[in-house]
Image 1: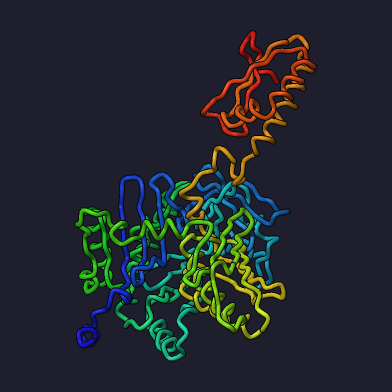
Image 2: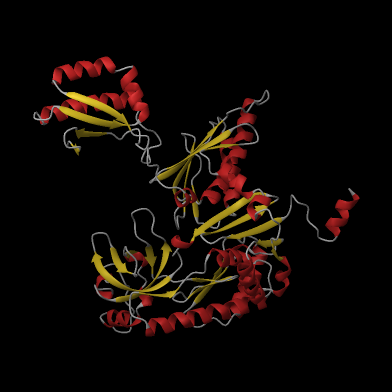
Amino acid sequence: MILEKIKRMFGVKSKEERRSLLLSVEPLEKRVALLEGGVVEEFSIEREGDRSISGNIYKARVHNVEPSLKALFVDIGLEKNGFLHFWDAVPAAMDEQIEAVERRGNRGRKPRITSNDIPRLYPAGAEVIVQVNKGPIGTKGARVTTNLSLPGRYLVLMPFGEMSGVSRKIEDPAERTRLRKILQELDVPDGMGVILRTNGEGLQTRYFVRDLALLLEQWRKVEEGMRSKNAPAVLLEEPDLVERSVRDFLTEEVDEVLVDNEDAEKRVRDMVGAISKRSLRKVKRHLAPEPLFEAYGVNRQIENALRRQIWLKSGAYLVVDETEALVSIDVNTGKSRGGKDHDDTILRTNLEAAEEAARQLRLRNLGGIIVIDFIDMRARRDQIAVYEKFKQCLRRDRARTNTLPISQLGLLEMTRQRVQESIRKAVHMECPCCRGKGMVKSFETMSVEIQREISRVLRTHPDVHEIKITVHPGVLHRLRTEDDELLAQLQRRSTGQFSFKADPNANVEDFKILNAATDQPLE
């Protein structure tokens, strides 16, 4: 007890209070985990051949205009063209063409640019500066915008936006007032705006001055590329996962940054040194023989967290299902056993589920439409309590979210910003057996289909009298042990001969019917 008091006096945190940023760099993969008290709260992964392009700035060329979609498709140098919606086509990015539109307006009065002007501002073949705000997902190309923004450690620079402000996640009125005064003192060039990030809470003016200088230097390089490069071309590439994580996660609350790679450690130290010399003491090299993520139990936690079924301490569990259109999270009582007050037990279980659901959204990087089916609560005040708890847990989420109160059906509906593929889609591929369905046909079903196909083939090929069928071993076992009499009847009716062969490499749903005389497939 006395030792704990002494530790608190000197600012030494207990294991349960420590916040650690782990950076694991391997030849094919980079991984980052943010731990709070040993529990993984944030997790990101980046493969060498699949680096995220979200945040990249391109000099693009308009490929075609689709007025019916109110969109432009622009060539940014990738396999698929970027999608630029009319409302994301900010005219400030093309000053000369805007001036031409303005000259068509009334004298001395700046006309309002509407969606009807966009095809004239951006005809096919025109060059435009865009930034990726959502990387390619599935079959869709990147979503781009001309609302450019350059994120720094404490500020976000908006080269074409004149408005400045403070992050909405900073809620203290006195702090917001203090930070607004600092923004007014910054030497922001005319025609530009800045947003003060959440990381800047409590900091002095010098941090923002230094950050702004770095961002303006970045923008100067972008402007040079705008003048010298031909479209399509990359003007600014977002840093890799290691640098992004240091930029976004290394706040005063982080107690240590552990890196398991010598080159990555040097990069982190160089980056941290340019921002805050005092924070250099937090950066450490992991030299133990046990791998970094194993030593801190990250691999085990991620493996458990990415399962379809997530158990809670109370004995209840979540079921997370991810589809193309939406994500569903179902809360079930499971092994949870409450006391005499049934309603109170359900409330406590749902509050625990709300906290874990918010964590799962961050860990899995789930986005789009999300529906959470909590355990039914009779009292409206309990529903409101769960809704408020969930919203509170979402405050730490860096992605934009929009949450609706629990409906009369007991469902909480929300949207979460989707910038790139979820962790599940990043590390998994479609199952070659079930082809993404999650289930395969039963051996009985395959027996029925094979018999049906044999009849069709022999009927459409009357000159073929002997065939060979290659099937999965489990299907062959079914055919020989339970359906042998049916096959014998089929053979007598068709006056043909057929033999079966097991292929251990075949999927359950795959089979081949060959002409025994030529070994050619029969369609």
